[in-house]
Length: 284
Image (cartoon, rainbow, N blue to C red; front, side):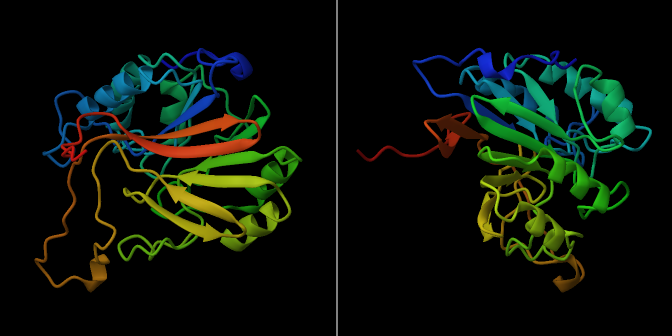
């Protein structure tokens, strides 16, 4: 199971010799033991490999931005969460989890009883890491692919934002990202979120959901989606209704990568590092 809440200002990698580091995991889509994602991909094994790589990075905080499992709200959900919880328990750094549209809040609460969430029934986060305000915003509408920012969430977020530099994690990008296969699932409440963030020192909105590495300047900040640990979707994949019948929609696996956020002296450095051999050919 997940690790208990800790004072994140003094995580395992903090100290004068290095900057505090947050690692983002997303879209692991773990299936039950003995099952493959879509009958083809061992998403549990990929997440396990990623966890081992994260442990080598001496992170101070790990945030999973949702779609932890494949069928969270369905009867298969508890078995999938059991598998995911066992893998994520190997993380050495404190773990915080947000839901995605493939997750179920009730099943997630049962699987990760040590998680500390706010704003029930939503699963929100608010914590401090050496002066960086880290917020996790639940953007899920259960039963829907698309995300939302309803009035209750606006009230919660408004009550948490302050003068600190802020890094916000959520599953759904709140704006179109230039991705034909995903932009049709419009986020409900993007304008309200932009208004809530206006005048605040929001360094970035770190998302998942779209299964590729993509960023968009929006509402005076950067919205950036990280690559999943499960299956990568090419950014030029057409929308489903634009495909002729029988047209293959290609998605696949790629060398695992890790999104890292390093915070020091009021500056946030964001980088993606390889979690396994990349196949890149050295030329110098």
